[in-house]
Image 1 (tube, rainbow, N blue to C red):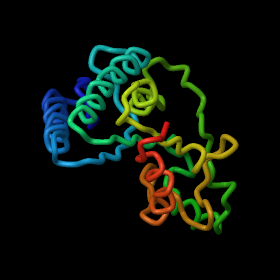
Image 2 (cartoon, rainbow, N blue to C red):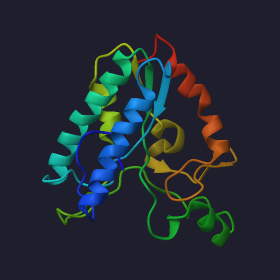
Image 3 (cartoon, rainbow, N blue to C red):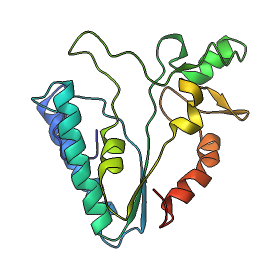
Image 4 (cartoon, rainbow, N blue to C red):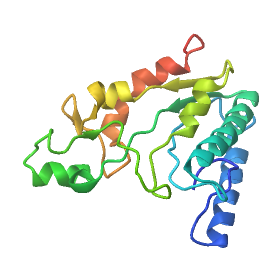
Length: 193
């Protein structure tokens, strides 16, 4: 589920309703005086109902802009971490790839910008939350370009600074996330972005 009001096209109407309810619940639990800092990251993994992929990017970005504005207008500083392209094929599960290849970092690396599929219905990587944060001119909305950290030179690495980056195909290890703390803390300061 994505935390926005853009209705997702999922397998069933019940799943779509549940995701919409979850998104509303997250906003209600994290807005107002509940938190003074919200750190978030989220890629778009499903199309918006009734939209193709370009329409999904447009609608999802608008919906995320609304959520970012609501969080920030409630008094919270919002820091959006750019999400990463998910590894595929043999590198899909990063730790398993490293184990299988005897820690061959090059064999377990993946492109920061995958090619756009030729099939118009095929899933594609997009990060409309990050796009919305970068476009929104709000003093409490900040962003962190994590590609500089994980994917220098256009290649995402399974190990950075001796630390495994992902514990599966799309979630940072706790240790790697801790190495990102200085960049996140810098973004949370009033002078950021």
